[in-house]
Image (cartoon, rainbow, N blue to C red; front, side, top):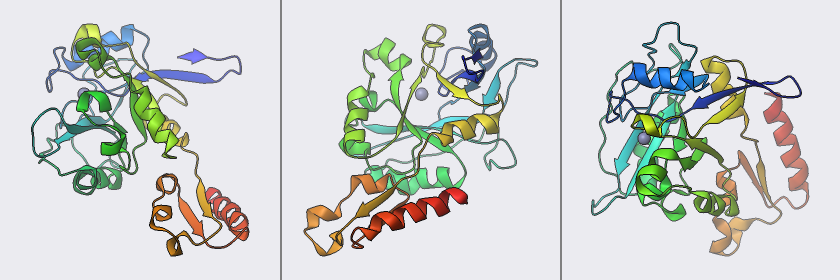
Length: 273
Ligand SMILES: [Zn+2]
């Protein structure tokens, strides 16, 4: 924990890590102890398709954020070409998943298929999702750019950088922001071995408990309304695809300059709710 000059408390955490519960080399106990020794306050143990709530180190200072990593290959399988997402969620009873719940998966056709088959369910079940290591997965912005509802994407992934020399991901993020798709960037380790842990992290200004940390992660999404002065649906087809709109909570079209007034009223009502 770090206290800044305003007296605000900042907690340090890792949102993506592996243990012997899947293909990691360190046990959950060793992984938790290593993070505690390195000054971490919270940790999500996100083993592949195997959900975790547990903290097997009694008395540990670490808050365990419930979660897992869920992945699916893009068919046909020819090379590494897949979607990996970290799902983190609230504690019971808000979280419908169970300790050690194992998730099956099938290949998907594309990002729309992945969204429909898996990601929508995650969001319906109160999970915050992070799009993982796009470069390692062989996905460019074109493959994953219109996935809806991801809280963040990985900008840095220590495991991929150390093992494979990939995943600084800044260009992918730049591409998304440039297209108006606003998404937060996070650094994670995705650590599978001791030397990969404790190199990438996030810091949140909150209390140190699961719901406060998740709220702080969510709170950084600023709501926006998209305004078109003309009715774009009645104009050329290229005007009808809006990447910015995909990141907005509402779109107003064809209301002239009054659209701006309506957008402000919409945001006021939204924020008052
Ligand atoms: Zn991973």
